Image (cartoon, rainbow, N blue to C red; front, side, top):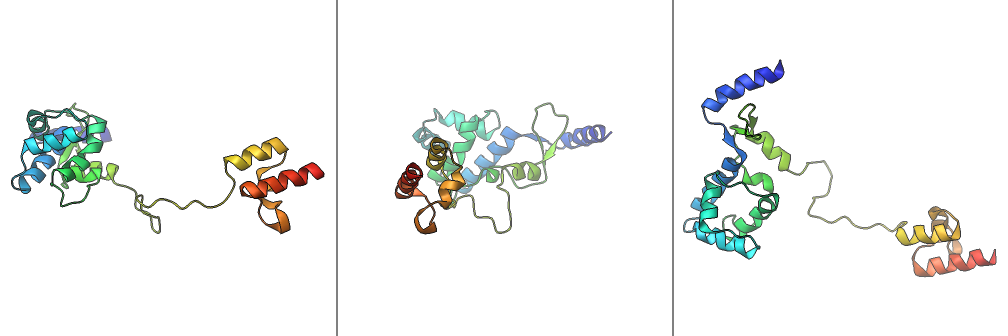
Length: 190
């Protein structure tokens, strides 16, 4: 019943202009290029070639019209290409920013049966926002602990990795080369 309702809604919405994913991305590319007065399709193609893509001015024109489907690699490189071409004000865009921020519907399947609001599609590409979580761009700090080397030594010695961790000299953790050598020596004398 819900699917039937969505189909009916999308048929009505389709009459007012449901766009494909390619048209949405292409339209945003064209909007950004035209807003950066003087940047030509040829200039965008040259920047794409710098990333190893075989784009020409005609390729960029086809993308802007929604007639050229982007591969996953091309879509992933598009923020870098736009930045290199001077279309983003010196910052690399997130993938979600390659889609217009509107309530228009987008046809993801090409079947023109069910439209999905562009805002929802943009959300699929946005990183999750969690309170207190570090930014995805910030690498996590490594905490000392049990690594692959400690697991291998523990397996060879017939003890648990936690046993290695707590059996160092003077109760200190037995991590690192010196600590492991001490632990191996202590086990040999037991």
